[in-house]
Image (cartoon, rainbow, N blue to C red; front, side, top):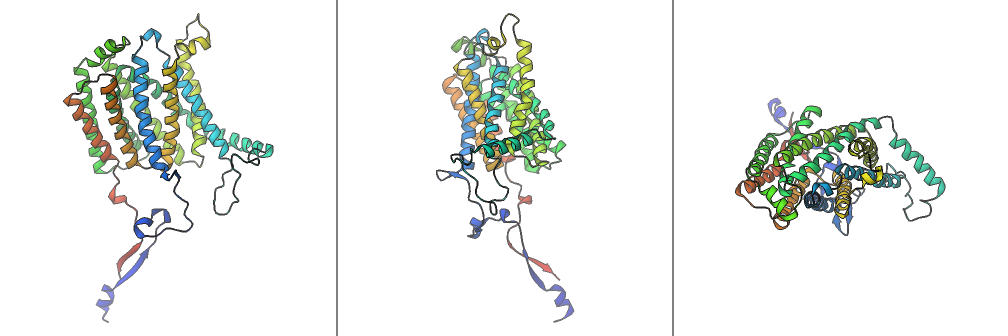
Length: 398
């Protein structure tokens, strides 16, 4: 064989990639030591969590809107109180879940199986004491103060959501609130140095256009105010005030979400521990508007739960469920399915607004909503250039 032929000969070199990047179903293989996919009644948890998140988002928008506009402002419950109760309940549930996870081993292959919740060993006094000490060390870790910034931002965002839901129709609020994708992307580029693909930039551009079209038709018609007063004799709605509240809520949501992601990436703490820390740091800023708005002639408890009826408790409960489901989505799902859940929640909110609130369908609203849905779908598509390599062979010239 000549020297030139030797230089042009081809050697097959096997490419190896981590197990988690391989598509075993496509290859007809399955690693023997891979953990099973989490499922409930045979349905993967990622699908259950996403459908639950879509329904929860829709229910929260509808019930929050109804609970704020169907009665006069003088008989309305306190939104800051709802935010405070949401943080208290979410923190308590996260603390309970974190407590049960303190015995979970880091390696499922070598460590002995841990006792279940129903076994006597799990609740043995020595184990409970040890678990409590470990939990306290985790919650009050030296870097826990980092959660104070997103905690304050989330409290502001939650209060702004109530302002927006009070002044916008449920469907309009749901579509407009997708601007958080735009703000989250902007802060991801600035703080995380994330690189967006060309299709994602196009999606963000059309997202802004779609939301703008929806707001143009909202401001052009006085349907919201007339409907609210006519059906419920409740608070009249201000579309401009509602839209400004949505913009501010999306801004704080994007900044808080990206900052929280930075904290998670730079630490090994459990997600439920971080949720406990978030709720703990949220209590003080959540109390501030309650104290400032308290009447001098009323007791603290009376002022706190004034007009706090069934609809108010329903709103708080759905918000708490949303916080827990979001944690499941972060763990079990991906961006494509989250985009599907977002689209599904928009459709549900739109249909509910038409059926329950006599929401008038206009061409501009349909056009803007369709653009937002397409932009959301496009933004969550995977970047083909960053697709992980699969097992195979590469031709290398020698």
